[in-house]
Every structure is written in C-alpha cells, then in structure tokens.
Length: 183
Image (cartoon, rainbow, N blue to C red):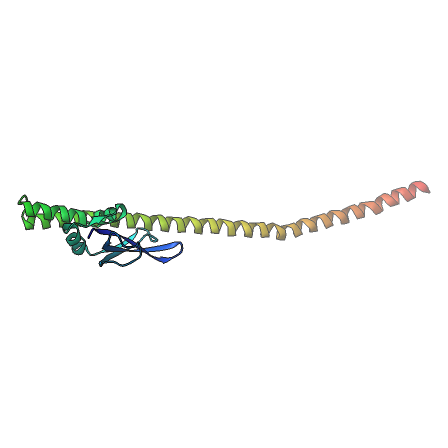
C-alpha cells in the first residue's frame, strides 16, 4: 500500500488548520488516515507547527513519500535531516552520538533563527503601535488647536465692537459738523 505524508484540511472557511497525517495515497484528502503526526496552523506569524519528529522519521524510513508542502514542513522541523542522519548511521558513516550531536546543533541554530524572527516581529509590532499612538496624539492636538481659535475669535469680535463704537463716536462728531454746516 503506497503511503503519503500529507496535510489534511480542517478549520473553517478562510481560516485553514491542517493536520499532518500518514495516509494511504488512494484515500481522500480529508478521509481516513493511518496516523496523525502533527498539526500546522498558517494563520499565525510565525506559523505554528507541531510535529512528532520520531513518528515522521519512522514513516519516512518505511517508505512513505511526503507531498511537497509536507516535505517543506518536515524539513523545517528537522524530520528530513534526522532521517538523513539515521541513514548515515545505518551505513556506518556516523555513530549514533555524532548524529544526535549534529541534530541537536541544528535544532539550536534553528531555534535561534525562529526566536530572532519572533523578536523582529514583536519589535515591528511595538514600533507600529508607537507610530499609531503618535499619529493619534497629533490628530488630537490638531483637533484641540482647531477648537482653540474659536475661543480667540471672540476677543477679535470685541475689538471689532470697540472699533464700531469708535466709529459711532466719530459719526456723531461728523453729524455735528454736518449740522453746523447746515446752519
């Protein structure tokens, strides 16, 4: 029976969630499977991958063929490397300890890369929040500044009223001149 390591889709429309399974190649995509090896959630950043590495290596050694996406996931989590190192141990090129040492060194390096990406994402997120806060403060200050000239406009109106009174005072004086001229 040909066995494939592939993704089985779950989740709701627009929010996929996948199980990583070993299944008969002739079965339906979301149908019967032989063993569930893990889960993959592409909706978060970085993507969440849970994988039983030893189970995946066991299936690979028994001849299971991963699909392209499943191969990328297995490679990302180190199952393909572990399978490769196990082949080297079987052939006598490596000892079990050397293979385990290489695998652990690779896991540490990979963990550091993932942590660096997570740190960069959180830093970018905090930077975006700080910029949004600064933009919001600027908008609020502009709104307050726009409301403040309305209050200053009233004293200008008072000055205009004072000018009007001055012109009224001048007007009667002009009226007096006009009345004296008439006489």
